[in-house]
Length: 153
Image (cartoon, rainbow, N blue to C red):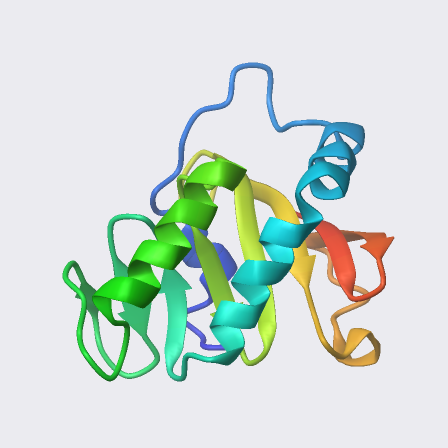
């Protein structure tokens, strides 16, 4: 993990308030079942991009520098960012995704701010055996092969 660039930590920076808290595990599971093809399309896009660790509808961040608010050829083209934005809109992902190595975190719900907030969403990992199983600040619930519901404290 990037220490200060931890994608789950950064997902809390652009936190939103969800009345009544995070959506239930059952509602996230139903969303995934209905829209699995769109989640998989985003994962496929991430495998075709190098050096990106945060992508939102409004900005993106690379592994080696700061936030970018306009496409950059060779990093994230206009066409590719547009494809992400269409999928984010379909999935209701206002906070986009974080990428750590080949793991992809879909932020569905953010409450609070860094250090005192929490995030809940869907995580994809191509190597479930290497995915964190025990972490006092991260709850994982298996969803499908390579897919989990995650929640941070």
